[in-house]
Picture 1 (cartoon, rainbow over the protein chains, first blue to last red):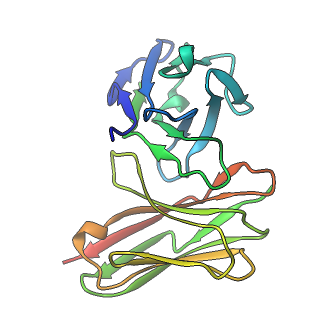
Picture 2 (picture 1 turned 180 degrees about the horizontal axis):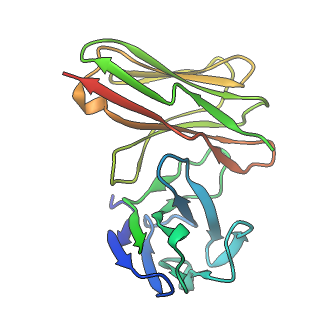
Picture 3 (picture 1 turned 30 degrees about the vertical axis):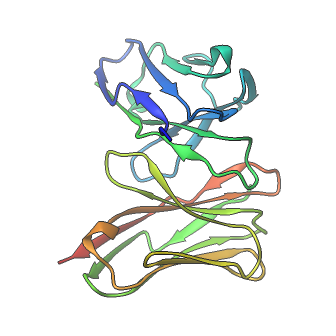
Length: 115
Length: 110
């Protein structure tokens, strides 16, 4: 079974530029998550999708971050314009359903450096 | 809000020695997950615990959830270089939101 795929793995951009990350979850997984992880901290949930609907985006900085999951499969996370503090690993994850007993599988992450 | 505290923050262990990492919450946990992360990579699922007193093992790694479901420990027996990395605990809180500890960095000395 293929795992969660993410691209690009690494990206360096200047502040105020834009960047987009792509995620393809495990086949059959209804729930997709985007996390932001800053070095030395645990992951922070940015947005959770159930199929193509948003379940939780309370911690997504909506003035600069946007995410979509068209057709309930692949997802894209965009940052525009980027700030220095956005430098982090962006982790995509998926599970068969929401939390509470469903194992969440993570991709390898997309490392963003904003200079 | 509920938080997960991991201890120690970092650990240096001689290869072959045993070690324990702890994950503690002030409130009851409704599902406890252990993940491992290597630098530059994503999180790898290790184990999930749901019942008080539950214990699971995989190869040389054993995880336990206490009876009160407020503390979990991860024990590694006869550590190897492949065990090095960051160990993260995550848990479902009372609102079924997933919360995370800050991680424990494990270094294995050859």
